[in-house]
Image 1 (cartoon, rainbow, N blue to C red):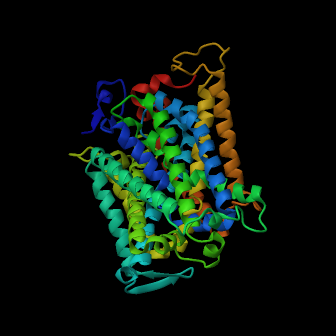
Image 2: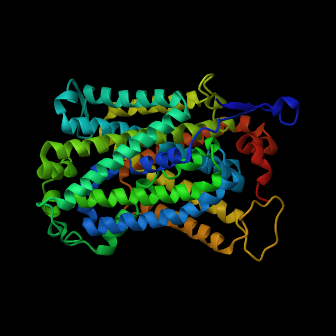
Image 3: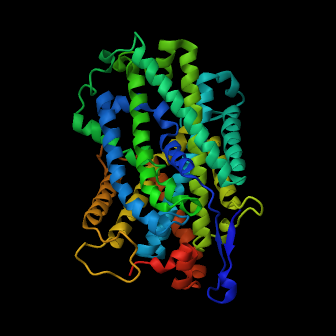
Length: 498
């Protein structure tokens, strides 16, 4: 059950601060991060990645991306420990850089989280369309960007969104417990696929050659995969969003993040090899399959192989839906509590103590997406990495500001562990890494640059953010800095950087 800090009624603070109950266990939090990071991409996208970079280039890119995410995670570990509150990156950016930049960070991060929820629901519809087309391809509606939209797909995607909105409304304990179960089933499916491919007679290492696509420079090919790391591993940053609900010490958060990133990298690598090994990968890519990994499993093991893969994908989609529902709703809850967006977003369910309006607002936005078809949705989701990268960079810059050189003088209210030159340097490297990711995504000619449609969608979101920010500015200005800090950080308000 959530509680409300009522110190505002005593005259110490003018406004009441609503808080979330501490009910999430370490294994649930780890599952939220891992399941969100893996999602549907590991099972559906390997063919497209290999077309870009080949098997070795894709594996190298995924592995290097994981290492870079671990570097960024150093900053997250410190900030979660120091400010264990909902909002994560939004709170860290506020502490270091103030309200306006916190809003920018939170606005882009909200876009990323909500888009991934919508994409995972559409991925479930795509799964049904591939495995049981007659079940979803009924009542054709229209064609958008070359994609035929069927009412059956809209129903499947919408039902998934509504189901997980309901589950999240019933409490963090339920969503955390289900997330762990879904994750274990997904990992069991991945293990069976790995064992099957390892011992299958038709799966050989010769099928994984050549290592890179012909005519592609290995460095550029690998770099194109490295550039998607912010999207591929988006999910480990769900841990700070849930920090207020930890029923354990936040000092464990860094280890949970590292475990989630390394496990996600392992799943990606296994599924890349499982896609390339059953038949020559160049032939697979040339055939332009709707789902190359499923074709490989079908060739090796028939219906059983597709069933195991389908189960793993369903669990991956479920973990992605659930995990990003948690993150999106907690971010909106924190921003509402800070009056950056309508404070109704911080309203809790009277019985279950969950941010119900934030959950259902996320669901409402995601219910719009299936009507426009998957291609249009992909234009929006292509820029998800931009929003997440902005949040990563802000977090590392905030950590750099909080860390101090080992030889410097202590500051008032310094948290434990901030006197560390190596960690300050690592936070600087993390910020540089985030800036490089941002450069790769937005620079024309980059191997990972956004498409024109994604640029247009990004421009629309920025315009909406500007309108929204100025519409809330008057109300925000009525809240003093002291009160705002209390609303965002609660009892940790005295740890603000000096």
